[in-house]
Length: 213
Ligand code: PRP
Ligand code: URA
Image (cartoon, rainbow, N blue to C red; front, side, top):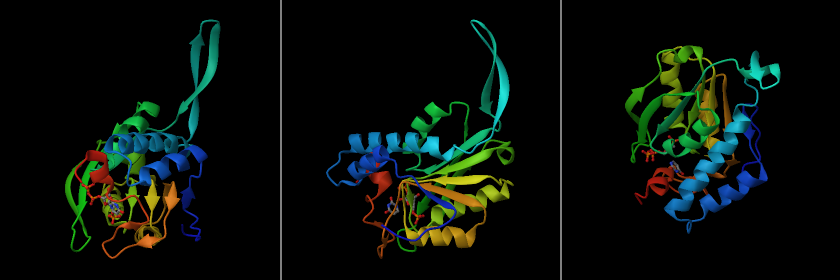
């Protein structure tokens, strides 16, 4: 665990999230349980990451008459990074069913660790929406940085990143590459190893989610 504090990073330390994350890290956790745990953590973290989103009044009719309620004032776009981000998306959509989903497909070249983008499809009005980039792992930050660079080309301003685990090196790389991006993570681990894996981490998130180990 890193002791360093970054002003744009929120560490979500809820006990239920920490318990689930510990079980997800365990090498003996099955694919089935890993998938369920990642989804559950993602849903819980979605509450935190949306906490400061603006709301507006609306008038609704209860069985006893009119009442003033609240609704999110801005549209939301979730951008999962394929593959592993897909493992987080359904529970978040249960919480935020009106959200749009933009997909970006990126994998890391195993030799260079550079991100390779192979697919992207975003809602046409994405620039007017609040965007949450979703990926369980922020390792070198190459994948997240490539995603944010792409989103900036679509004039997206409001970007948050939701991950489960971050490496200090990845946070530094993200902050060196991009301004005005906030990160929500359940843990900041010690470091990256020489293959770019987070240590102690949880291994390869995509492989553990989809059983491709
Ligand atoms: C993993 C993970 C992130 C990326 C993080 O994807 O899901 O997208 O690595 O590493 P980075 O911060 O160094 O870019 P991977 O490249 O294994 O692709 P996959 O999800 O298709 O397996
Ligand atoms: N991608 C993963 O899935 N795990 C890591 O530790 C680093 C990158």
